[in-house]
Image 1 (tube, rainbow, N blue to C red):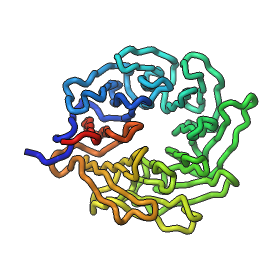
Image 2: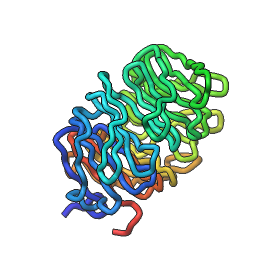
Image 3: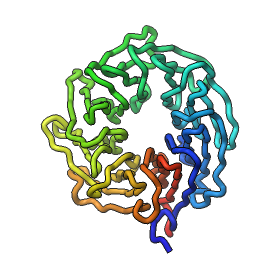
Image 4: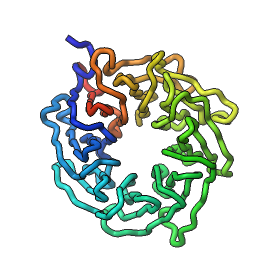
Length: 349
């Protein structure tokens, strides 16, 4: 009998195609996952331990992006079919947009939603059909993020990032320039800094108060996942055989060395997610291992590491995406081999 925590407190199920992205609903009552074939899997909180009760829908011909919707109990997904689809947790699907180009990125706040197609990014009201503005970029948008207050919107692309004010009557872009291919981005919870992952195994950041550049390098692999901790003191990143954490306090990250967490020699971290309520970071590895690691505000070396599942026990494939519920009491992960797993962290075994 396996001692894996996922067996005791969760469930897993294998699908035919890779899991592209996972997400938690804004109300924390469900999870969802999108596959490369365009399937959307809905997982209510009361079915975290029962994979047979998960609902499988087909909103797309080819899935590309997934995010929690503006409304508490729904998701937004985009695909190769040029559709932006809203799916509520009862399985109802509504096509909000249908075009000729892929929908590659999507994000939302309680008041707005945004999606990108090629160089264009379209901002809409939360109800989903009224377009407020269409914003053009110099090249294909590779990532979208709102700041924590939902007032600013940033899009990564080749040679930098474009920042916009959501409510501005006249759309004046703030360009954050740095040569190269920027493939994803994250914004500090207090809006102090913005960080992108680069094609060249580096991170680049900007201090938003004055535009000061920050470079974070030394990764053996491309950084495909990053997440600020709940208080913004640390930026957790993948791309090494440990979770690499950059300090965003005491003048950092410039001039400060990163610290490491949950090192598994020879296994590279492929996805990270910070718990929204606790000083805990979830890390997924290239063999399908998933762990929870504690960190302190001052440093990371004194924390415990709790395995949820081990790639050495069951082959699951590279972890592509991780997400906690907003309350932090449950977690979902997906892998390149199509494995989708959930663990309820709030209840006793």
